[in-house]
Image (cartoon, rainbow, N blue to C red; front, side):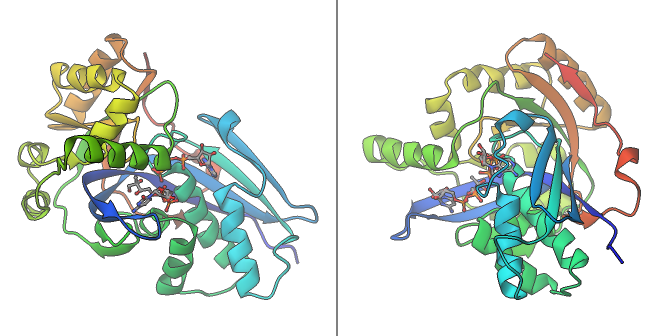
Length: 318
Ligand SMILES: C[C@](O)(CO)[C@H](O)COP(=O)(O)OP(=O)(O)OC[C@H]1O[C@@H](n2ccc(N)nc2=O)[C@H](O)[C@@H]1O
Ligand SMILES: Nc1ncnc2c1ncn2[C@@H]1O[C@H](COP(=O)(O)OP(=O)(O)OP(=O)(O)O)[C@@H](O)[C@H]1O
């Protein structure tokens, strides 16, 4: 019997706190970060097929590679090797429906890799547990374990070592997408360059932010959002300064560049206020598109409903 296709929904992430240490000998930077999974999602469907194929639809689909460099194929190769299948001909077709901005600092490719791990684990009945999947996820990329786990988590090492964090209540966000993406290694490289030139501007300790998350008060959390990569992203994309200012002028409590950027995330007092801020920011003409989102949401999850029933995320075109 041909197994039924498996669809997994997987969230974007924002780093509420991203403290970047020095570059390590392996080229990675030591991080202390707090991830939150947001309600912008990709759906990844995996089904058995004679010829391997990968198709991408949705937000930014044209700029996503469909060949072996797609992180979803990397996930398949690792699971095939582990289960004694041919990594070059795994007998799978993958279909990705993107709602997460591509190259936006929201872990879009990592999300698809995490979703593929979940889907193929189920399709091939591998019965790999959470820890095993997490260990494979870390071989794909630093953000992939968090895409599997979701929620709110403290990440250390290169970001792959996770512990869940208590976050009371739901937080409401406005997400401003820029015209083009930024390269993650390029932004880390720019931070190294800026630090060599100007010394070590670093955000503070993570503990006050963890307390704000536990209190559930968005006003307290807003004061503590911070990202060491922000200066580097702004240096490479100076228009982000204007976007960050415009979000706060529109009524957000605070704004921060998401991960390596160029997406900016604005924290708002509640859901209604987020919709209002999104409309105003959209009218300011500083970014390509504005979305509203909330978090935390769960990590990669097999969908029991039909993907056709997927709710359309609220979207405001700038
Ligand atoms: C910016 C963040 O999104 C914040 O969560 C992540 O640090 C990036 O995670 P990612 O996209 O999964 O990154 P990876 O695929 O693991 O690494 C891509 C490149 O980013 C840089 N990189 C990544 C993670 C890290 N802790 N230090 C780094 O310097 C390295 O140049 C690396 O070659
Ligand atoms: N499934 C995928 N979806 C999107 N991009 C992918 C995928 N697989 C590989 N890529 C490549 O990865 C690059 C970065 O895309 P991605 O959307 O993961 O960036 P990002 O969100 O900035 O990543 P991160 O926040 O993890 O640093 C893209 O330009 C694309 O070439």
